[in-house]
Image 1 (tube, rainbow, N blue to C red):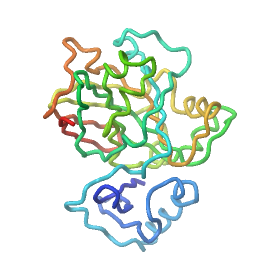
Image 2 (cartoon, helix red, strand yellow; image 1 turned 90 degrees about the horizontal axis):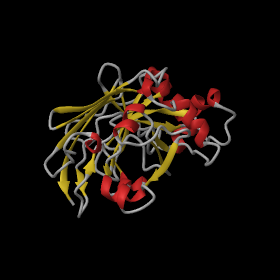
Image 3 (cartoon, one colour; image 1 turned 60 degrees about the vertical axis):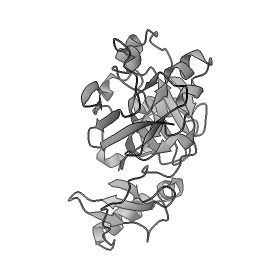
Length: 283
């Protein structure tokens, strides 16, 4: 299933996009797409109602598409998780996942405007596969258990300010947590539609020029490993988001470092998960 949220910020309505392109209103089943829905058998109720034909249609014309899950409790990020990206940044190949946190308030809709921070000269792009947790994950025994705790997947744009990230602190959070720095969506695609999250193609273009083109099969640490690993150090709650890293092609690693400026546009796609498009503006 493809779940989404439609409406103005803070007033989004939960919806389902069907295989034939219709949009169905989920308001009779849930107030929002959140951890309570994901962990409480809500996906099964949505599927049953859709199959029974009891959900009313919703006209999406003119409605903003919000992030496909309500503001998550936490956004956990994995750095340097593609060999080619680690190489282009001059970093060594990590022996363990590189973990950092991103302010959940950065999560916005997939077509919302992204703001370049005041004082920024090195705002960068990163297309990533986002994993949305569907069941509480705590001290999982190993990767074989991990995917059972995943509700689904989405496109995530892990926008970064490299000077803030790399020069201003020994931690990465300053350059990752600026407002609007995590467009998410358009859909939460349930895990049953993504039988192998390691066989997806990621693409990102800036002003119509393709900059990133990678495959999740090139991850150093795959999705199952990451979920199991993180569960040893933190409790992953339903609705939490994991950004799993980006392939090569970021401005930081390109000749001339063509960082983003006001007026630039980015377009992102991942196989089966839809597409995003943002225009950048000055904060």
